[in-house]
Image 1 (cartoon, rainbow, N blue to C red):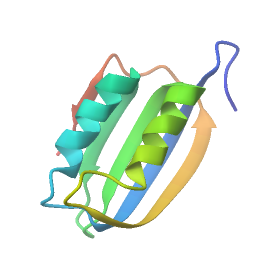
Image 2 (image 1 turned 90 degrees about the vertical axis):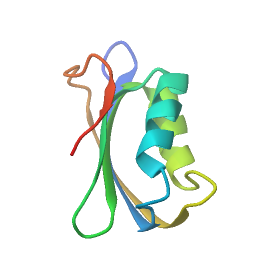
Image 3 (image 1 turned 60 degrees about the vertical axis):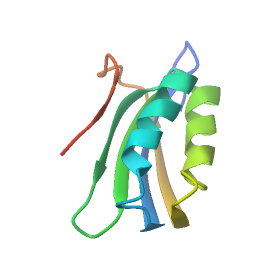
Length: 96
């Protein structure tokens, strides 16, 4: 699924105790660390949803981090949909 430059997109849904534990702000910091663009937001069902785009290895590292999250989170499941890179983001943000 990676493009010719080795870039990929992942749509991720994280469940467990992931809201009210700084998951979104920690994800923004991690995305900056890995050079990944996209967004993260809380969903009404208590899950956190995110879209990551960037180099395959960096996106995979950020997805791996989501399995743990910040220290106060209790991640129960991470669902990942791998997609073709679209290049639609210039940075990483929190959506509301």
